[in-house]
Length: 239
Image (cartoon, rainbow, N blue to C red; front, side, top):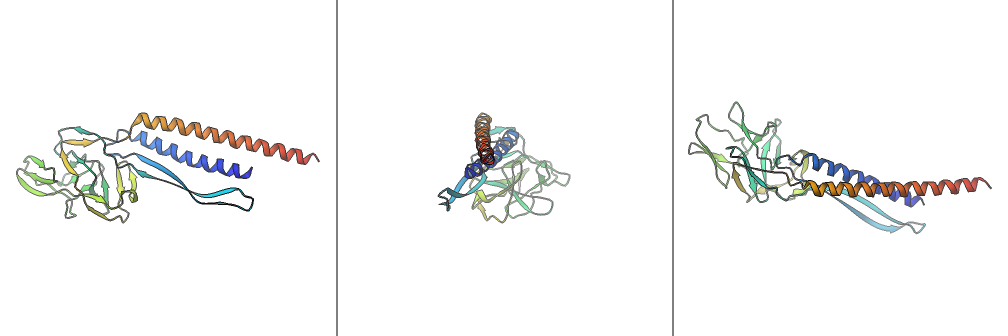
């Protein structure tokens, strides 16, 4: 009986985390470059206890689905998207490198190319990409070479982590490097495009409904077991 209670509580905890994950995916369905979170659960060290009851160590986690979203043409000269695996390398105010697929960039007052949130787009030499105030046409090749008025100003840094699942999501479509080793990526840069989220809202809603039903079934199992134990305790108390 107690084992059933433990199983029900563990399952409800995992389902609650999955519901949070699905809710976050749905909230970012329209976030540029967002990659949906996927969850997993493992049962390790399966064994029998002294009462012959099956036991295991449960491990749950999640990772970002690396499947690319569809590309939407915008025509913006600093709107960049990636075809293939890889991330843009960006830098926050503290100098820490982050990775993102969100290529919606703008120019600040100093001519530095930044995300709307203020993250500086890095060149392949690790320096923030800055454009001269010449006012010439901005062109970006599929290899990431940037030029202004026909004058080259640097190459956009596009990298691929050795283990993408080790990246830590910070917010939306941005990840912390967390010491993950990276290497140059072969993804093609598309100027004038933005990558949409890879979230399928219909699938996420279907998953959410399934998780809610499973959660309710575990609740019922928990309540039934509690009622049985209560009845047994009352019966024993009557002797």
